Length: 91
Image 1: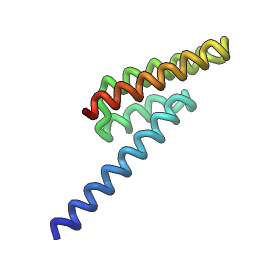
Image 2: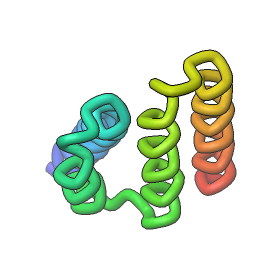
Image 3: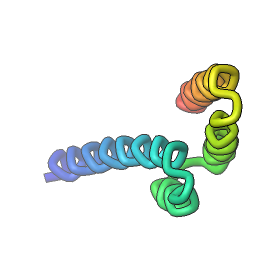
Image 4: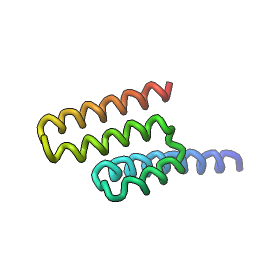
């Protein structure tokens, strides 16, 4: 029976991680929903440091409409740094 509970916990954790990624993407692309996305991601256990990086990404994304090419590159670099930071936290 413990094995079944363990499997449910693993599946729930995977769903939470997937939902967190979806909310992060939505936070960046749907500026008007950013506050709600941040709250939901925080409830899913995302570290505050990660949310700070995402907050910067949202601001950069907003600024990108003014300077598309330069900001797009800056946005991509930010996401890559964020992914690297998350990978470092996993260890």
